[in-house]
Image 1 (cartoon, helix red, strand yellow):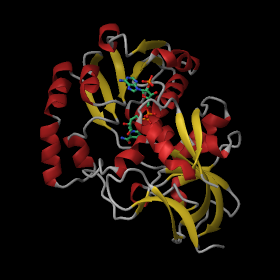
Image 2: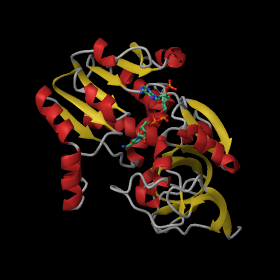
Image 3: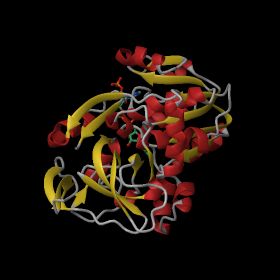
Image 4: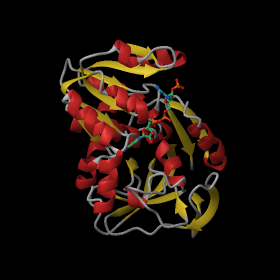
Length: 336
Ligand SMILES: NC(=O)c1ccc[n+]([C@@H]2O[C@H](COP(=O)([O-])OP(=O)(O)OC[C@H]3O[C@@H](n4cnc5c(N)ncnc54)[C@H](OP(=O)(O)O)[C@@H]3O)[C@@H](O)[C@H]2O)c1
């Protein structure tokens, strides 16, 4: 086996785009497996990580190989690995302090992976972990959606939205979503009950009395969500600011807790005014939940949705496209 591998890495924050470099092979711990990565997906978090945009929550040593989720084949197992064997086809989302899936080989804990859904290609499987887990945790763990409840999913045509619509429908919700006109048909085909063209219509003028909003946009769009939420409802954001409650749960230092309390004053006021709850979600990797998603996928309840497959060597093109903010569905990097 070659002692080095190709990987897409940065040497400093705000680098234009990651460079393909020869780096040493990763070493596995006793509970890790070594995966020959076949595909990985690009997520907005990769751009934010590259630009140091998550420093309040995560800091990294340089050089840094980017990439959060992947699919591939196990080629080595650690001494204490019990759940997987060499040759298993798997998919996963690595822990945030162990990112680096834009590489030919990856060391990952057995706790953070699951067997790849048998009905998906490796490219399709790589599209699922990050957006699937985030959507599942928002809709199932935080909102605990029950049949008949109403949820607005912002940006239904994005990587998150496409999976979130399907999961919310599986849970029996009435789903409203925002997208632009060119993607209306697409989000309807995924099950959205009500589609709002965000370029010509204002969702806050159309919707009211919603049980939940799944916010993927932050800023003013997040603030407007409170005008459609019913008392006792939940606004769950993955793009807004973390609040003091999150800072406490995430064990952030006191100064960060104070800074976030100040920064989210407006959201706290809106929560009180509307008698609703604001929740910032920072997704947690989970092999167990990937098992659940695998069952949904194999049952045909959730379909992968891919926009483009781009070779690792063209990583700049992949980053530029993701940065445009108008990718529909997922962008996949083909690695091996
Ligand atoms: N906190 C966490 O754990 C976590 C986890 C995952 C993702 N995130 C964050 O969630 C956000 C969404 O991620 P993603 O993967 O879904 O992004 P994405 O795939 O890049 O989203 C692109 C989509 O957003 C749509 N869009 C853009 N502006 C919009 C608007 N104002 N209203 C409605 N739709 C709009 C675009 O549709 P058009 O082309 O029609 O404009 C496009 O289809 C990112 O900021 C990401 O960092 C956070």
